[in-house]
Amino acid sequence: MLKGRHLIDPEDLHLQELEEIFQLTNLIIKNQEDFHNLCKGKILGTLFYEPSTRTRFSFEAAMLRLGGKVIGFSEPGSSSVMKGESLPDTIRTVAAYTDIIAMRHPKEGAPKYASLYSQVPIINAGDGGHQHPTQTLADLFTILKSKGRLNNLAIGFCGDLKFGRTVHSLIKAITRYPNITLYLISPEELQIPAYIRKEVLEDKNIDFIEVERLEEVLDKLDVLYMTRVQKERFFNEADYIRLRDSYILDLKNLAKASKDLSILHPLPRLKEISTEVDQDPRALYFQQVKNGMYIRMALIMKLLGVDKC
Ligand code: NCD
Image 1 (cartoon, rainbow, N blue to C red):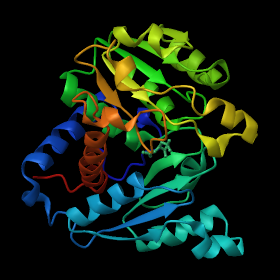
Image 2 (image 1 turned 90 degrees about the vertical axis):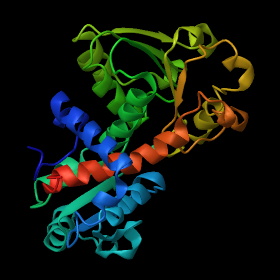
Image 3 (image 1 turned 30 degrees about the horizontal axis):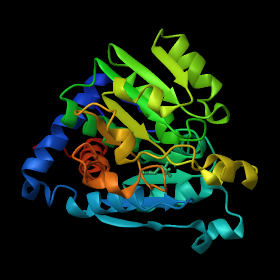
C-alpha cells in the first residue's frame, strides 16, 4: 500500500509498487477522461525552493487533470521563508492546508527532514545534487515503453554525473533490475559520487565502466542518458566554463550508434544535444516530458489512495 507514504528516495518504492505505477500510468494514458474527477476536493502543495519548469508544471498539471487543486510557491521569496521561518514550521503549516506536498530544495536531505514534520505525504521533487525520484519514474517508464523491458540493458550516462541528481536516482533504480551494464561517461572531475560507486555499484556487483569519451562506447548502448553540467552546484565559474561543453551529441556522432538507441535527457538541455537530433526517432526526451506528467498522476493517486478504478 502506497497510501500515506512519503517518496524521498527511489528505493522507497518496491519493484512491485513500481510495476503497479507503470500499469496505472498506462491506463491513464489510454482512458484519460476516466480520471478527471478522482482527486476532486484534494489539494497539492508545491514548495519549490529552487527553479523548475517540468517538475513543477507536471505536478500541477497532474493534479489539475485529476480534478484536484494546487497551492504553493515557485520561489520561496514570496513566503515567510524570507522572514526566517524554519522548514519544520513551514511544512507543518502547508501540511495543515493540503493533502500531499511536492517539494524541491537546494539542500540535500531537506525533503527527508520535512517528512519528519508532515502529516501528509512529502514527495521529493529534487534535493540539491542528491536525488530526484519522480524524474526517475518518468525515465524508467520511458525506457520501458521504448525497449519493452528494464533488464538486460546497456545504459550510458553522459555529462555531469557528480552533481546530476537525476543520474544518481536513475542509477539507484535501474540497477535493481537484472543484467544492467552501465557506461559512465564524464570528465574525471564530474564522475559519480563515491557513495554511488561504493554502495550502489561495487557492493552490489553491478557491471560498470567509466570512460571520458562518448565515441568510445556509443555503439554499445541501448539507452543514452545525456545530462546538463549543473552550473548552480559549482564552486568556481572557471571550472564550469571549462567543463560545460564537454559533450555534444549531434547527427554526426549518432551515426555510430545503434538504430534502436533510446536517447533520454531530463532537460533542460543546453548544448549537449544539438537541436538537429530532435527530429531523429531515437530522441525520446520530449516523450519523457509527457510521460513525467502521466506518471505523476499515477503517483499522486497511489499516495492519496484514490486508485480504485
Ligand atoms: C533536472 C533537475 O532539476 O535535476 N530537471 C528536471 O527535473 N527535469 C535536470 C537538470 O536540472 O539538469
